[in-house]
Length: 215
Image (cartoon, rainbow, N blue to C red; front, side, top):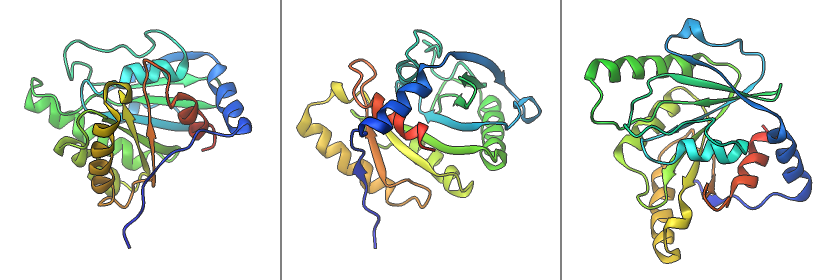
């Protein structure tokens, strides 16, 4: 039987407050990691964010944390090849993975990043969930499918977060949503709930906060 994927509903008052409190704490950049021996201690809950270049990952992290520029968007896709760790209060690590699907990076750099990512995903015991960001205008592309396969093989539960929902007309969004659901159904590690967001308008941010707070 094929798994059903539904849109995440807005949180109830208690869950929303739990999420608000978690993200009311201070967000600080901890470090950028280029090798496994540079990872911080696995002493708290950790969630990571993955997405192809220009999907709006930095904007989403900034909206979640209520800060401007804590996660900086680069004008050059794939420019940052580090795994960036942020502390969210004393309880949580937010991890910003490098944008994938970049064409301009040298092959050696891409291979090095892929190797580090595989080792990180397979060996990080406090990683509770990966959030895979998908552009609401374009749906799941081949590069997104690759990262999902990697998460399947690493046995890391991932949840789809659709970005830039405000940029798409409702009828077009429904079509893209069906494509995304079909793509997710092929991945055993996919969590059966999709979060629809707009960093610009704040849509879905409270929902995502409450999901993270409940992990």
